[in-house]
Length: 381
Image 1 (tube, rainbow, N blue to C red):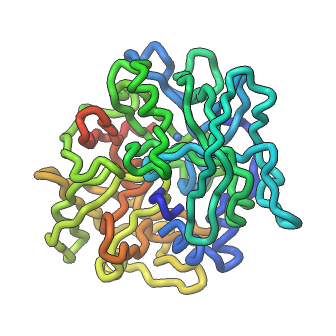
Image 2 (image 1 turned 180 degrees about the vertical axis):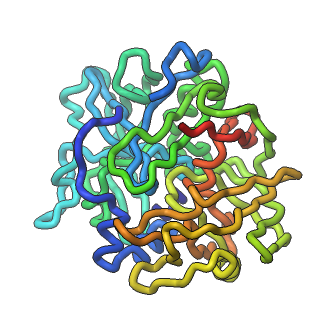
C-alpha cells in the first residue's frame, strides 16, 4: 500500500473490510484514504516461505512474531511502505478504541526487547499511527524455522487511526526500501539482508485468486529465493527507476480497441487490492470492459459472468495480460466490480499502482540487491 494509502491463523473472521465498507457506502472514501499450502522449506531452495491468507482477493494477511518468546501479530506484508508497526500494550482510543480487539505488544514480556525512546508518526488519509520505537527480534512467521531477524527497530503504536478498527490486521510490515521509511528506520527485510540471513537479497510474492472466500490460504512470500514451485520461469526483469517504492517504467496499456502508449512510472504494491490508474485512463478501460460507474460502491461494476478483453500492460518490451479471473472481482455476494480504480498522484510519485490483480496473474520478484523487478507466470491451482 502506498505510504499515504493505505503466521496464518485458522479462525473465522467477519466479512472482509471491502464487503463491510461497500455495504455501508464507505468504500470510495476508504480507497481515497489509502490513495499470501503447496510449498515447504525443502522445495524452495534456500528461501524462507511465509504463507498468507486471502480475504475476498482484497487483503492478504500474514503472521509474524516479535520478541522472545514470540508474540504473534497479523499484518499486511506491504511492498508499498517500509515501516513495521504493531499496537503497543498501552494503545488506547476512548469509547471507539480501534486497538480494542488487536493483539498488542508487551515489551515487559520479551527478554530481547531494547528501549529506543524515539517517537514515530505515520500519517494516513484519515488519521495516523503514532507511538514510540523499540528494538526486538522479528520472525516472518511463527515457526522456529522461519526467517528470524534480531535487532529490528519497529513502531509500538499507542494510538492508531479509526479506520483500522474494522481491519482484520493488527499492523503493517513494510517491505520497501529504507529510503521510503518514516524516520529512516531500517525495514526488517533490509536488516535480514544486512545481517546476511538470506542467500539472495530478494523475495518472491505469489498470490492465489480465491474470489468470494474468507480467510482461506492465499499465497506465499518467499524470502531469499525465487519461488520456482509456484511460479514459472522468469519472463523478464525491469530496472527500478526509484529504489524507494518498487517503482519502474510502464510503456503502454491496452484493452479491446483502447490503447495508450504515453508511458508512466508505476509501482508494484502488495498492499493495494486493485489496480490504480489516472482517472481518464480508468474511464477508458472501464468503457472497453463494458463496466459502469456505481456511485454507491465507488467502483465500476459489471456482470460477474461477463467476458471482457484482456488488459495488456507493456513493461520493457514484454506484454503482460490480465484476464477475467483477475480483472473481475466480487463486490457483494451477487455483484462484481472491475479491478481498477482512479488514482491521481497530484504530479508526485508514481502514476499507476499495480496492486493484487497484477500480482495474482504474475509472480513478482522484488530484487532488492539488484534494484530491479522480475515477473514470472503464476502457477495457480
